[in-house]
Amino acid sequence: MQLLQSVPDNRRDALTRSGSGLSWLGEWQYAHRGLHGAGVPENSPAAFAAAIRDQMGIECDIQRSRDGRAIVFHDWELDRLTGSTGPVIAKTSDELGRIALTAGDDTIPNLRRTLDQIGGRVPLLIEIKSKSDLKVSPLCLPVRRALEGYVGQHAIMSFDPRISRWFANHSPHTPRGLVITEENARGLSGQIKRWMAFRHARPQFLAYDIRDLPSSFAAAKRKAGYPVLTWTVRSTELRLRAKEHADASIAEGAGVA
Image (cartoon, rainbow, N blue to C red; front, side, top):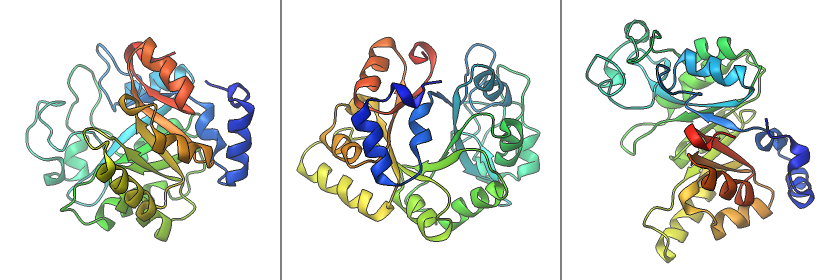
C-alpha cells in the first residue's frame, strides 16, 4: 500500500483544497483486473483474493447482463476469456455465473459477489464499459443497485463521459472518474475534446493512460486538486513514471511494486 504520507506536501495540500474527500485514491496501488497471472484469470475471485492478500486496491471491469445485472468481465465477447462464445449481454446473470473462466477454477462473478468478497478490506475501482451507441442508464443502474449499502471505499470510472455525468446526477455520493487516453489525438483538436469530455463528465478524478504521461492536461487537473491515477503500469520504468506524474498506479505484472 502506498501511504498518503509519501505524497509530496504540495500534492497533499491540493487534494485537501479540492474538498473531494478522495485523498484515499492516492494511498493505494491498484491491481489491474485483480492480481492475475499464470493460473489466475483476470477479473476473477482468485485474482481479487490475491490482491486482498497483498493489500492492494483492486480495479475491475463491468459489463451488463441480459437481465440487467452488473457483471465483472472486461471483453464484450466471451470468446477470449472463457470456453463460451458470443456477447456477454446476450446471457443472463445466472447463465454467466455458470461459465468457467479459462486457466482457473472460477466462474464469471457479478459485482455484488465481488463486493461481498472484498468486504471493504481494500478499495475498489469499477470501470464501466460503454459504447457510443448504448444508452447510459441501463449500464449505470445495475452498478448503483449493487453498491447499495456497501460502505467500503469504492469509485466508478469510464472512458465514456456520460457515465460519470450520470453518477453526478443520479448518485452524487458515488465517487466518479473519467478514464483518458490521448492516443493519436495530442494536437489542438484532441485537447479541445478532452476539455469538453471533462466538462461534460464532471469527474472527481482522472485515470490516465501511462503512455501519455507527462501530460499538460493531467498536470493541470492534478494541480487543481483532482487525483490522477494511471494505467496500465507494466514495468519498473513505467512505475517510476507513474510515481512522478500521478498519485497512484493501476498495475500488473512487473509494474506491481
